[in-house]
Amino acid sequence: MTGQLSLPIDPSADAWLSDFAGPSWMSLIDLVRQLHTGLIDRLYIHAGPYTGKTHLLSAICGSFVEMGQTAIQVSLTELLNAPTESLAALEFFDLVALDDLEVIQGNPAWEEAIFHLINRSMQGEVKLIFASRLPPQGLSLKLPDLASRLLQATVFRMPETLQQADRQAVLEAVLERRGWQLDARIVDYLLVHGPSRPGLLLKILDEVGERFERQRRRPSPSFIRQTLQFIEERLQAEA
Image (cartoon, rainbow, N blue to C red; front, side):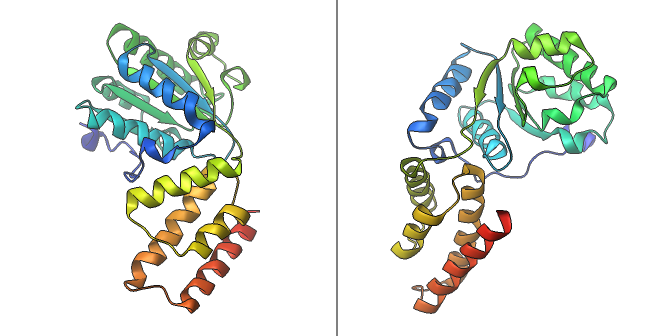
């Protein structure tokens, strides 16, 4: 069904809830458990850029699939080019994760479509997750009923920055899951000088991991120097 409608599903599959390790994520993991058990049926996640929202949506969808349920993650930024009727197909999933919610602001047709999707989900057993750069009360919506529905969701604000303990927990979790044994100098550099924004840390770690996997042998001193230089350049570019 989704293929027939050409829905822009986020292709990221290499994301796990275990990636969100550390004390800053404990309340989030608890909310996901409540979503699994049906204690909550709507979750609204918000934070600025490079905070890992899209990675988190992929991880939550993956956790539902692991439990034998169906889940879909869709970018509303890309879906705006499709007819609003395409949302009707989503109600057949157990979990629907909609990213970039802020892009529908001021678009009457899409605001109404999201409102009807929420209403249909309440009639069935569809769970919804919304991700946005803005909190629900910060959205400039033309449809008051939609604003009211979004305010009824359980809200979680993603950490904008991570303390070193959180960065270390995230690094260790991702490295262990992927079986990467990076040189201690690279890990230490990421801990001390790496980004505090979780999404950017995960992004740079992905890129470092790709370089590591292409090495295919014990990393040489020159490879380590090049990797450290690469990380520094990426950090400067994102600053």
